[in-house]
View 1 (tube, rainbow, N blue to C red):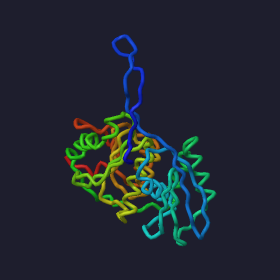
View 2 (view 1 turned 60 degrees about the vertical axis):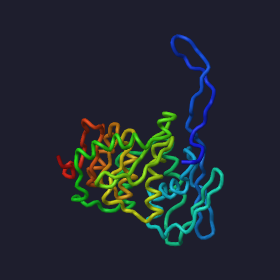
View 3 (view 1 turned 45 degrees about the vertical axis):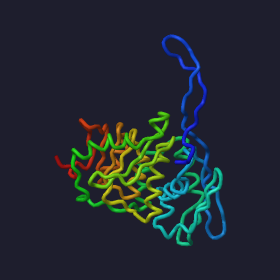
View 4 (view 1 turned 135 degrees about the vertical axis):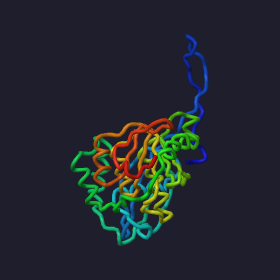
Amino acid sequence: MSAEEWRDLPIQRWEAGRLQPSMDSLALEEPLELLVRRNGVTDAVSITMRSPGDDAALAVGFLHGEGVVRQRSHVVDIEIDPGKVTVGLSDACSFDIDQLKRHFYATSSCGVCGRASIEAITANEPPEIDNDVPQVSSDMLASLAAQLKSVQETFEKTGGLHAAALFHSDGSLRLACEDVGRHNAVDKVVGHLFLDAELPASSSILLLSGRLAFELVQKAAMAGIPVVAGIGAASSLAVELARQRGMTLVGFLSEQRFNVYSGAWRLSG
């Protein structure tokens, strides 16, 4: 996140039967343009609304999820300007820029199309996920809900952000990111792992503060993350993808209970 994560604004609050002046803390939301540069040619890929900060991680996390960059050496440099980030790519990156643009605007405006989307994941060659790794304690997994809440500092202040947190298989926190966009929060986590050359994250647990949508599970699959949990519900397509990829998918996570939609063999207790 940026140094300025929220802004206090004067508002009118209705309480006890009447309106009265008050102040409220609002999460910042600003546009970010993503560009890629390869062989001396720079192309604009997308404009996304995001919480300022972690822009480099957001950019490379998005590109990794789209199969554009696969290893750390594919990113030569990253230039960050106000409201814009340009990712310099090596000659080893091979992709159709027009197809990448079309896919971004299709998923942003109208969602993705079921079967075709799952087939597209396979076409992007996500890493294989080991069915035996990691083995996770159910009690430990349930405890992560409270851990996630404790690191949602800006959400606590504003109530306006999604969060994604990556845990090691023993329940220790690796990193957490917040953003006004749930997809952005996941891209930031994956982007940090990519920049640190820690992908695939084959022994990790990804915990999301909201529901488990297909696109979020897709990003986890591309990062090789075997266990994905969420505080909210899972969608049918997210479950289908998780089962196809051999991922453990857990919804309605709380300290008292949770639902296991796929991959229960990784859980003990």
